[in-house]
Length: 343
Image 1 (spheres, one colour):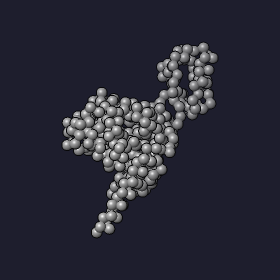
Image 2 (cartoon, helix red, strand yellow):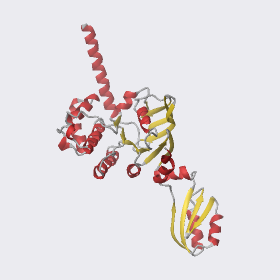
Image 3 (cartoon, helix red, strand yellow):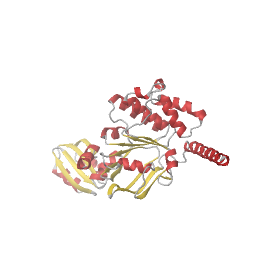
Image 4 (cartoon, one colour):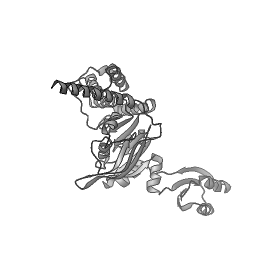
């Protein structure tokens, strides 16, 4: 019996040492900004024959604030569960910093922080005690814990409330404590599910400001899952749009509309005083022009390339006054109306 206890104690010490080493390694990333941090390939998940995520291919690069936009039931939560290794894909793979989420879930969790929509804290403990519990679970060295608790509470503006019971916290305070809980293990990737849901505008903006600062100063990559257009537009540098389990678009906001609605083409709007038929015909005859439409004094040109310089030359050569010319891109609102209202 004593030998068994000695063996168990030795195993526990070895595991603890390994976890400690893993924590130290997780603080340093070999990836540079712009390199792929999250890579999903042909990712599919079925529940009882029903497809929740359908052949999804998605990349989140280090340093991005990536917005995963979609209505409830689009497959966002299932994707996150597979990313965290909490459910296995039916087929396909997903990796975080090179670690396979299905085969190496502990390593993925070591470098990833997750803020669920519904928070779960011990209400009868203080903010500090809750954070200490998280730190101990993640095997953060004892001599670092109190300093890290103070640091993350200052980041979210709760340092004066650290000895207050969580049961007395408002919804906004609990949300900020949730972000502190994510930050305490220095994650490379922070996943936030509806981080501003149900909060007033002032508190929501404070949280978004925190995210932007942490992204720039701590170089934390964020994956934000939401159905809120204004949230995604305000903070995200890149987005993926999910609908009925499929990723229907991925990229920068200003390029998504062109890809989804224009088949990669450019829609150029030109506002000119005293438009003539001669000018319209010259624009139609330009190389790469697909279609020209006139509405009032605004010409709308659909083309395979950005031909604004050629159009400007025609207008100037014909002594016309150009008052406006711009690339028209579909907004997220238009994308939302097209795809999400069908859900």
